[in-house]
Image (cartoon, rainbow, N blue to C red; front, top):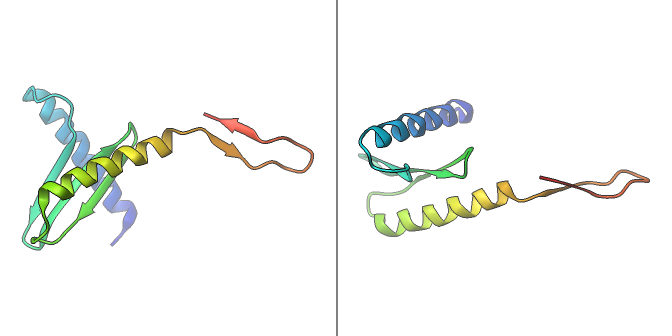
Length: 98
């Protein structure tokens, strides 16, 4: 799998689906479920810029997978949004970045 191409396709699906949800007056898009013959794949927004893609087996408990995916996407968005500490170079202090 080409990760860059897959990421671009997922981003496109999320953008188009968000517009469709808006047109249909469904509120903010939370998640997309793609139901394939080998099992579902969920695409979930993770903050303003991120997304989480999860593929599972057809036998998986989809409700639990949906909840776990939403929680994980939320946690990822918090990690990405958290301030980062830039490593100090010799003779300098640590710098906090937003």
